[in-house]
Amino acid sequence: MNFKYSFIFLFFIQLAIRYSNAKVTVDTICKNGKLIQMSNHFECLCSTGFVLKNENTCEPTVICDKLENKGKVCGEYAACVNQANAAPNVLRCECLAGFILSQGVCKPLKCNNFDCAAGKCIVDGVNPTCSCDIGKILQNGKCTGTGQTKCSLKCKAQEECKLQGKHYECVAKPQAPGTGGGAGTTPPTNGSFMNEMSIFSIIALFVMYIAVM
Image (tube, rainbow, N blue to C red; front, side):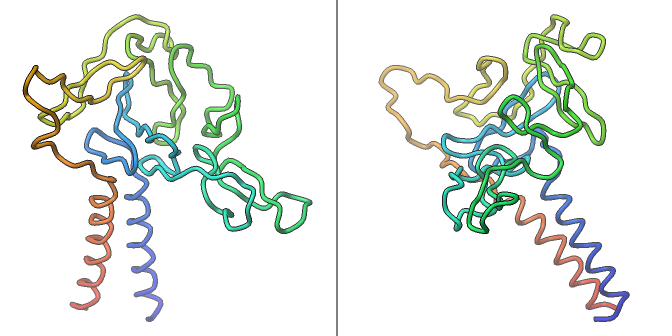
């Protein structure tokens, strides 16, 4: 593969990586979790025992007590790494690159000391901003205003959008007496298929491009 093809190949790989870590939208399928909505953004809420590895992927959480767990997630946006100035087989849980430990959780570095009041700091593109709890809206850059946000989640036929604490999520509709349970429901998905197919499509486009050169 000459330099020209190598450059094009790297371009398509970067495009695939960028897509796989794209901003969470109303159409995102969360792997090992569910999509929830705050006032002005969507995010993935992981199933019990799972934590966020990236914005749309939850993986089982581990304890950094075995060398075999090196590189595995030990908290949201955190992984087991070799402990500095320690034996090679000693691991510790550290935040991923671009994140910093704040009040026991890993937050985006750009959100360090960024106060949102009734909400959370997120990075919108390159700049930090506040995403408010449902019932609060931005006022002078903080979640101090009072207001309502309409649910935009695309719930399934047997689900409805409900306010769950500070966010919206799709929950099963209550069943009428005597209707039974579970018949005809759609089986849950781990959410990775659509993202993998999209990445595959990008790679396929590269192969087709090379074939016609």
